[in-house]
Amino acid sequence: MTQAGGVRQNLIALGLFVVVLAALLLWVGASGYRQDLVVLSASFALIALGIYIPFLLGGLLSVAYSAYALIGSYAVGILALYTDWPIPLAWIGGMIVAAVVAVLLGIATARLSGFHLVAVTLLFSTAFQTFLTDAESITGGSRGLLGFRALDFFGYPVSRQAQMIVAVVLVGVLGHLINRLASSPWGIVLQSSRAAPLAVESNGISVTALRLQALALGAAVASLGGALFATYNGGVSPETFSLQTVFVAAFMPLVGGVGSAWGGVIGAVLGIETTVNLPAVGDSGSFIFSLAVLVVLVLVPTGVLGALQWLLKAGAAAMGRRQMPIDKTPQEKLS
Amino acid sequence: MLEPQLWISVLEIGSFYSLLALAYMIIRQGAGLLNFALAGYAMLAGVCAVWATTTLHLPVWPALGVGAAAGILASVATEFLVVRPMVKRTENEELPLVMAVAAVLFALEQGSGSIFGRTNMRGLRPFDFPPILVGEAVVTPTTVSLVGTTLVVFFLYSLWLHRSRTGRMLRAVGDNSEAAGVLGFPIAWIRFTAFVIAGAIVSVAGIVFAQKAGISFRSGLPWALKGFIAAVIGGSGTEWAPLVGGMVLGCADVFVPYYLGGAALDYSIFVIAVVFFIFRPQGIFAERVRA
Image (tube, rainbow over all chains, first blue to last red; front, side, top):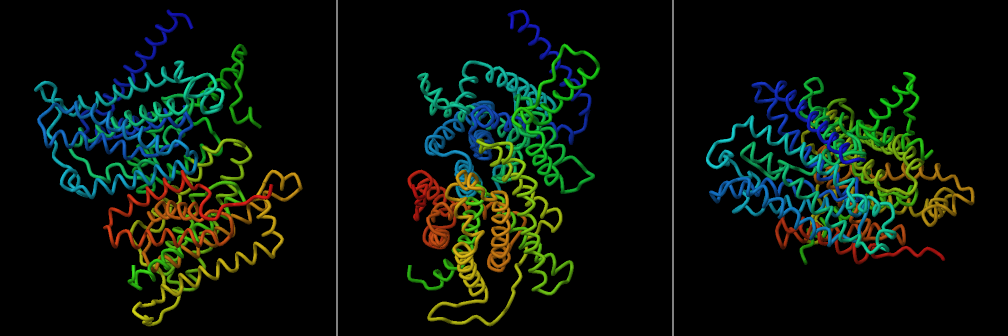
């Protein structure tokens, strides 16, 4: 791609983002409930983006993400209740702590993969939740931490609407950066290490180090999601991000589409919409979402984005513009 | 470690974990995957049996039948609708299958919650008698049904594995599925059988264990993890290995909270899992595949 083409693409992306943000602001209006919904979706989108880096780029199914999100949330809580430092420091602190924990856990589980890695990281999340419930003097036990002071910017209070915008902008920026990262040399090596670790290793690149970097990065992004959520709600408990929610978060990038970081964002919006906001289905939203996940896994492994892309191309071809060849879906290529 | 009552508890909990571990082993041999969702079948069977008595007003034994049928059906559905199409497509990739069984487990939990309610339920008691005092320990109907069921299941399974045609084929596929395929073994049929048998075993396990610990739609995930660890601890060298793995994990489950407090259990389970997975992934009884 030429330099000018890259700039043009970035401008288009920026324009698209501004349009989405404007549409969101119009839709939310003055509704506090819709505002909550957007922040919840944005938080989960960040967690899904965090999962996307090691899982879909590196093939590492570490699922300790409820722990990382909780680290972010509790960092905000502890800083807000026990110090008078500015709250965004806690966002950064939480990201660092989560990254360190992810590296330690990654070292301990370096030899595991697949089912075993899932089991151990789930057990870690369980143990971490127990720890939060148990260490009552710091974490407030099962009640958690409540009543944080409101977010301010050098003394100026930041309204809830502004916080929502910050959350959405963070999702946009990080999603864009992660997409860039995926096509950077680092991202390409990481993706190759998934398919051919020996080839990567024989080029003098340590696969272990690469994986630890991916895990640390993912944990930091997920922790930011937890931190935003806790800042907005002014409270957190061990149940805020339970093992069940991490399941939902891990499915989000798959539903949205595995080819791009935006898949995680779309998955988060769809996931929150079905599990929280569909009044017609009552409390069956999670059930419907999990069935959707199964349908995607079994029938459309490229997810919503992949299916859309395929439809667009097929549609363009049907309309007679034959210069665009129809790409086969990965499923067809394999069979 | 001298309290006899605690050992009774170990036997009860250990029995349950052994059955889950056995089911893990069967599906692993037949299909080559560790099916987390099987704890979901156990939960579904238990919850559905309770629901059959409270909502359909069935007597206990027919209700147990309904529960077991639901569990087996879920297992067979997993094989047909998820595993079979995915095994065809993803030959060398494990990750999509891991996500798929996790999604099945999650769907079973949420589905049971939506259909049968999200409350904690008391398990059904297939038979009842006043507690018996054996030495210093009290033996309840729960103890008898849990331990008895486990022994019967393991005995029958061992008999089936060694005496029946399908049982011997399952062992062959478990040892080397490619070679078995080359020799013309009906791989898909064996995988189906493995899911049916494992589904039946965990359904019975879930129904019987529900009377000890109670049951809710959220029981699936914790059971899945415990059964998985028991399966890894035991190894797959013999069909009795899951029994040992289950009992070892049962000891941890009973004695750690008793001596060190409840929170220590979750920490030590994590440590046990890491230690076993990393240093002895083949378990106590290692598989010796003939070279």
